[in-house]
Length: 166
Image (cartoon, rainbow, N blue to C red):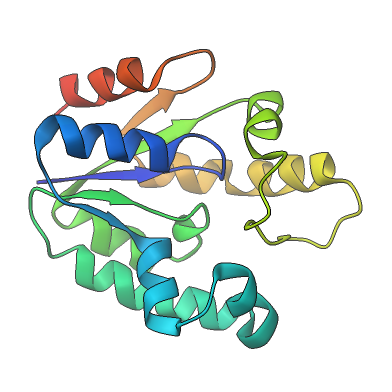
């Protein structure tokens, strides 16, 4: 059984995944890192040079591969739920945890990040976060086994809750 973390960018997936991997002594796979490795480009470069469709196609290939693992922490990109086949592959041997956060929390966490390409080309980053998050909420809900709020919580508290639900 794998632990699969899904959720919007800035909800703590990568940080919580590292804590869980250390606590459980399980390997950690980041789908975004695997995409970068396969493409030989950073995420912003992939989007700029090859586009979102290419990124999503590679993401699907990665999900199908890592979904077959066992006793692995899988840290996914925020848009992994956009394709049902990704969710199906990750659920095959995984329990899916949706790490959620309110928009102000997300904004605070990602405001200085340079490696998160725009998803909508909106002028206001707040508008973009609200629009994309609202669009994805039903997909996160449908994909997950458990919802884990991350606002005002430590990484250890979040990891502990996830472990308790395994």
